[in-house]
Length: 132
Image (cartoon, rainbow, N blue to C red; front, side, top):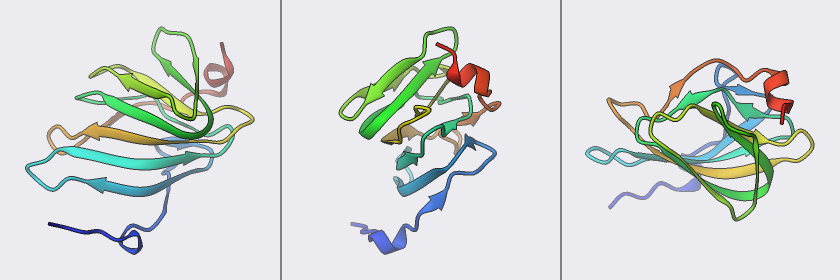
């Protein structure tokens, strides 16, 4: 058995390479090998979002608070709220974040393939972020 206390997991700022706006990562964890699961509580301030990205085995989001937006490439932007869950298929190009006026937090769960749970792509432009 392993126990990681909250003091073992300091808050981290979402890196500007992968996020636009103020984003905080809390309680991030990875299952030890041979497990492949990673998860984190991600807190987005209004206007903050991820860059476009994919996950080799897909991604599950559970919205904890606030209101946000999600979009898959070629699809419509969709609103998400506390209590919603979102599943992105393996390799599905997408982004997610807060709305322009409301903060949002979610728990993100994904699995590693060859050591990485995510393939980061380019930033989401303000035009794409605000488009319907």
